[in-house]
Image 1 (tube, one colour):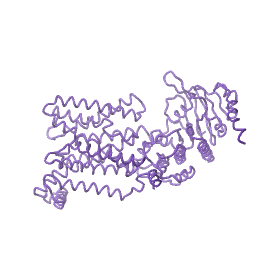
Image 2 (cartoon, each protein chain N blue to C red):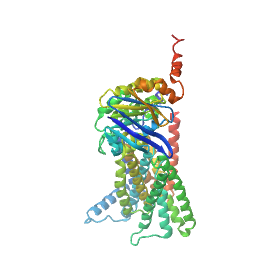
Image 3 (cartoon, rainbow over the protein chains, first blue to last red):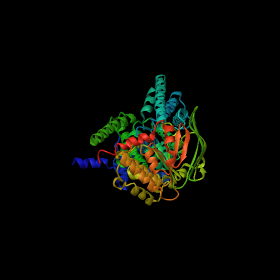
Length: 358
Length: 256
């Protein structure tokens, strides 16, 4: 018995992961989405929610049909669907970015936040709130623009610093610079919060993340960036595998190491920048989702990245649902939920796997 | 000429690591690069992989390596390092398949670059069939080195560059790795360059040899001449022949 257990441990996980498991992952995400449309301060039966969404979709495609009316349909179509989709897409975006970083830097602790990009993005957003930067006619566009700008600026500073320190852009240098930069940015945010007076509450909410009040424009922004930058990352699965085996090995098998590294870093910072601009800093999704997905799927990025996307979407939709229902009518920042659930789940899984391997 | 190195000089600041070294390797040759620590052996490998700032000329299959794109370079030169620190639990098969990277062109093409037979042959040759689905994190040092050797065989470059390939391995694995490489070398249009510490292995397997000392070329030619008593004594500052004989002599009597 003991022997058999040992044999199982040396065998690799995720051996038979095929279409069936993808369907299961997708079903979980779909279930999370449907739950999000039904549950809340005004409960809506599943059938009503589905017919409201179908009616809304029909109206959007063929305007000659009327939009569905009634309180339930309005809540579902104007509040819950864009919110759930924003949460799901943010989760997918963050998990994919984290997954790519963990492969590229051969480090399971890497993530958009380790790179310092999230901090740069939230600093941009906080600055927008404090100085009241707005673009006339487009609400929230000021925050989005400064936040995405902050992410890119952060990347630029981190990469320049890392490059000055070490011309080969080694992974350790990038992580070290990223962590230090993150701490610095967080201090700057704290200083801003201290002097921000009446904005404090809004800023705090931003730094903890929230999906409240998201609209279809947010969904569109997330979707487009997922398609473009996520698509580029997904196309680099083989290169990320080579990096995850080792940078020297990647070079030996013929990967254009510097080009791939730059491409991945730019895509990751774009994805994280957009996600932060929509939902604030949401901790743990980018770090833990790929890690847990890897336990099921195995480390091959060609399978791992799409699976992490779907898992991240399901995880963040459920977290958002919990954030607005558990203490209803109060609403928790979504980052609080992801950190609470994520940390406990992570420790549990880590403990189980360590105990098992002894 | 498969590999040609002309006037290779590597400097880090004021320190000269390699000083005007030239040599070439032709089809069917196995060049052994030997010398004491700090002689600049591994720096030659780094220069071939464009990992060290050098002046001079490194040509592979007649073309200057600075002009070759990474993917094309990988189909001409493959490097086996002395140790590997794999990040995640990839299977043996996945690591071997990575060797086909330079042969894949499209995003959606298969990992083996459409040549499952090349991967299969490499796996078979290195005796990895029984551990195909095993995680590389659970392998012994020798098994891991064999996995990366199979990756190189799947990559199928013209020149194999080995940086002290059996440094951490016990005698059995040393023998295995060297036997596998000399088997690989039998196919036409292939050559091997390896950095070695063990002079006995260098003499046994090398067709040519290079002796370095503090960045300078001391001798080159056939191993018997290069590893002559005088050359070795000059480079290692001790009577290497006498020492080797003493060491090996211990095994002659007693047990028989």
